[in-house]
Length: 371
Image (tube, rainbow, N blue to C red):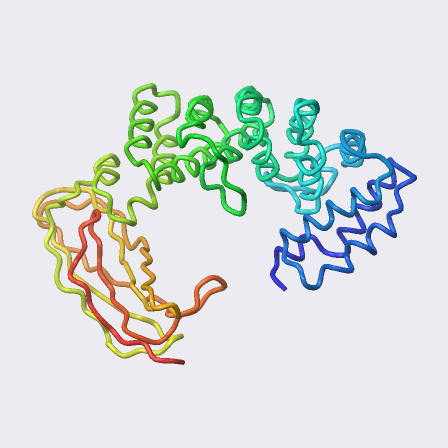
């Protein structure tokens, strides 16, 4: 069972039951836990959250906003009292946020429902639940979200950026314009919390997937305004453009001060061997010589076969450095050819290229057999 599934385990469902029963004695905690946990063995984390939320609805003696009030009362006095030691929160409180759009998504309850999610987010980040309100009530919800950018709790400020991301992982898409969240980010990019600015960068990264000029224009404006420290602005820009850098976008490199046509000479890529097995270490080297002083961001890019017949292309950062005219550096890396939880390697012909400020080398080919 995956680690995240343990984050909503039988013990934690029992804890939810105890906490709710403590403020609502009519709530049958034992029946709730029994019904919810009965379906867990076949479910992943997201379905466990939904099942637990449904169990709360089934066993609470009240519904709608009254039920939400019970869930709010059941929270420990502070996140610290709940044992939460990180900014994101505990999955044990994910069903509480899930409950709100399931049972209070209407115009009449909108203000109270959004305020409940603001309060829940300190215990478990509520961006997924917020997406349903954005979809159904975009104008009203965005107005509330913008007010959160000045909230004293950095977790609420981060929620303002995170819930409006165009490509939020593990969540539904929202039918709003790609630039809808920019006014919110304008309030947040100078935030003192890295939890917030990481979300700002991720939000821009989502936009960059479809509209890199919009992201570069926004970053350029922020750089001129100077409301973020240089260190934090550089962090946001690097994170926002990381995916486009790996794809070799010249404009992204130029924005960060890496010339897209760097004054360097790169030798052919050398492989220790061209015949490997899954589980082996791929060892490659190459020599780079600078003909003028410059900044370099060097990636290596692996192209591999898949079971579907399509090629998987993945870029990895190899080195970021500044070089002087005439300086020579050896590029070297050992890369483990191992399957992961999300990627299964298959036998076949692989290629490797080195990318210097987005400019690719000639590819080197090698064959990978079964382990």
